[in-house]
Image (cartoon, rainbow, N blue to C red; front, side, top):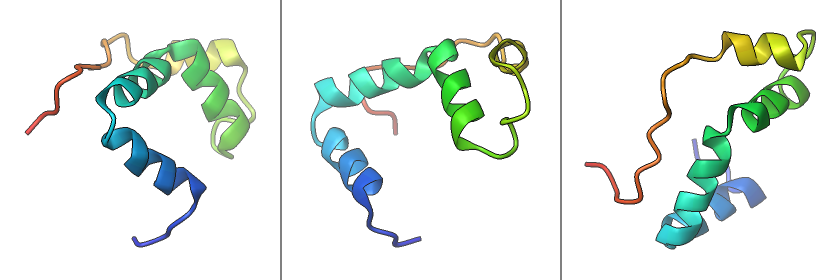
Length: 70
């Protein structure tokens, strides 16, 4: 997919800056924040409460290592 929009450009910029990349990973690993994104930005989750979405998220920890993975 070769869509070039503001979001994709921002993602590429953070990939070049490890500190920003780590900050974004930490943000998306925050499950209350992620539940808000899912509810407000997707049709699939819109009808559910934030609490229901939080309960549906896995209890597994999200890997937010600073170093790149192969």
